[in-house]
Length: 369
Image (cartoon, rainbow, N blue to C red; front, side, top):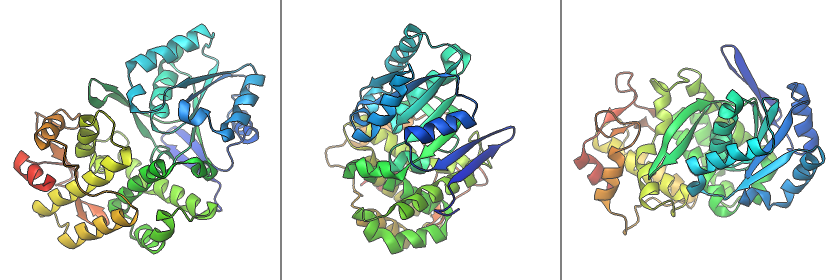
């Protein structure tokens, strides 16, 4: 996989879809639609309020309007990832007379993808979807056989399913529109992929961490990061698409991250929670002696700090409250809090091929101190 490789095909059994690394202008979008034989379908573009106001979005929206298509925009952010937004989207499609000959395009980062996929998969039983990820996070993680979810009460992704798109267009130029906060979202996810098991990628990122932290990257290097992230995730997912064993390792730090994000009522930035709780999971691994050493933990922390990511829990957060939220995590069984944990800086513990282990409250609380 290299920056000159413009198309990657993601295969699985009798289904495959392309990830295309090129400019996401309306001409390229139209070309993909034609290649997929979707040219006669009526398009519904779903995006959020942050993406819609960007100038880069206007040309695509104007082209869609001229073709008698519709654009639906909902409020950006995690609070919109709920059943109310889903119902509004479905009502909107029906009111605008979208039937089974429709096509959904998700122009997005995190929440848009969840909502657009639930709508596309259930509207008139199913309509196809093309996604255009606009952030480091979505280009790194969410282009590969993704899990989509809707939040219920304060439980993150309580309703969820496995989904994949019909095509993905990755345009790294979009990254120029990101705030530093959203840029760090994706860098936290990339650190996770270092730990999952690619030493060459780890070494490359260490060599380039200063440029990454200061956003001094050209399109070639940003494309390389996006492609490597997709390759690492796909190497895991292709072995276990339905998360029965090894795919659980992609949940590294998720149990604690979802808890701290929920406890803050989603006021803490995504990257903030991810980075802190990656360190907590690393401390749990050292306490349980999985093979993840204090040296590995220090290296992980140094990388996070060099990317200007936090590594300590906010003083105002209540540890007991976080434990209670963790108990409700969807990955648990019989109220036991379960973690996926690293074995070393480039690989995860398999726990006798379960890839997950139960961790008692006392160990978690010690790791949080």
